[in-house]
Image 1 (cartoon, rainbow, N blue to C red):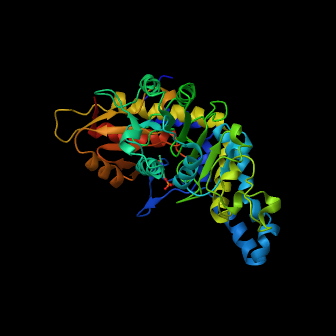
Image 2 (cartoon, rainbow, N blue to C red; image 1 turned 45 degrees about the vertical axis):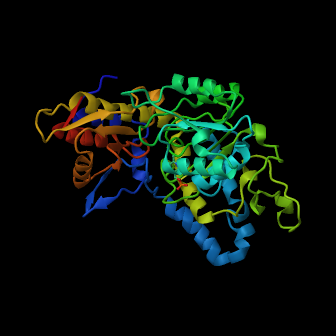
Image 3 (cartoon, protein in one colour; image 1 turned 180 degrees about the vertical axis):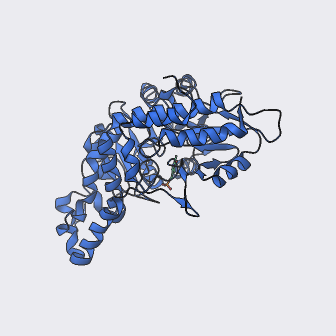
Length: 430
Ligand SMILES: *Cc1c(COP(=O)(O)O)cnc(C)c1O
C-alpha cells in the first residue's frame, strides 16, 4: 500500500478497519485529565471494560458460596482454567490438550526445563539468543547449575553479525549444526524483547530436531502479537505471560504449551503437585502421582481464579476479533508507523537538537510483530522523557532503545499518525 503522511489518510484507514470499534472495549490511561496515546502493550496491555464484570462474578460467588464455589460457582473453580483452553489454543495454533494456564512465565519455564532439559555427558549444550531477557538468562544459568554443570561451557549465544542488530536465521541454524553432537536444547524468545525480531520458530525447531535436540520458547512477546502454529511447527514446549499482549492485568497468571507427543509421557520427570493429579483421585489423598494427560499435567497448585477471570475477559476480546483481522491490521499499523519514521523523519541532522534514529526491528512483516524498536544515537532517554511529556506512552530499554508498539486491538491509524507526526519535527532517520 502507498502510505501518505496526513491525518485524512490515517482517518481513511481507520474507517476501513474491521476492528475500528474494538478501541471502545478498553480503558485508556490519562495524565492530569488528558488522555494518553498508549503504545506500551508490549509491557502491560490495557484493561478490557469487561474485566471487572468477569472478576466480580467470582467475587460474588465467593461471597455467596464460599468453599462451595469450588464446585457450585457458575464457573466451578476446581476446573476454572479449562474455560480458557479453547481460545488460548486457537491463539497459539495448538490443540486444546497442549495448552494450560498456571503460575507465571518464569515459573513455568523452570518447571518445563525440569522435564525437557535432561543433559547427559555427551549432550548438554543449550543454544540461545544473544542477550536474552534477564529472567531467561537467570533461569538458564541456574537450571544448568542444578545439573552440576558450568553455565559458561554450556550456553551458546547466537549473536548478530558485526554492525547488524538482527540475528540471522542461517547463523542460528549453522550454530545448531556446529554443536549438534553436544546439543541438548535450543531455547529462544518468540519475539526478541529488545529488537522486536520475530524468530523463525519453524526453521529453528526443525534444525534442533535434526540435530537430535529439543526446542523450547519464551513467548512472552509473541503470544497475542504474532501468528503462531506451535503444534504444526512441532515445538516441544513454550511458556508466556498474559499481561503484555493478552491484556490480563499486572502480574496475571501465565500459560504453557507442551506438544501433544508428550501428552501421555506421564513418566517424564517433572515438578509435581496435586493440581496435575487425575481429577478422580485428586482428593483421595493417596500416595502415587498420576499426572493428567497433556499440558494440565504440569500444574502444581490450584487455580488462581481471580487472575484467570481477568484473562477470560481478555481472551473473549481476542476471540471476537479473530486471528485473521488481528494479524492483518497489525501488519498495516506497524508498517504505517515505520513509513512515518523512515521516510518522514527528516529534521535537520546538523542541528544539535535533532535526534538521530534508526529502526532496528526487521522491516519484513514476517520477521516482526507490532513493536518497533528505535535506536536513538544521541540522547534516547531525553527523547523518551519528551514523548512521555507529550502524552505518548512508550517505553525505554537500556542502553538506548525506545519501543513503540501500536496494538491492533486498541490503537488506530490516527494514533500512529500523531506519534509519527510528532517525531517528524525533532528526529532524523538515517
Ligand atoms: C515479560 C517477560 C518475562 C516476565 O516473566 P514473569 O515470570 O512473568 O515475571 C519473561 N520473559 C520474557 C522474554 C519477557 O518479556
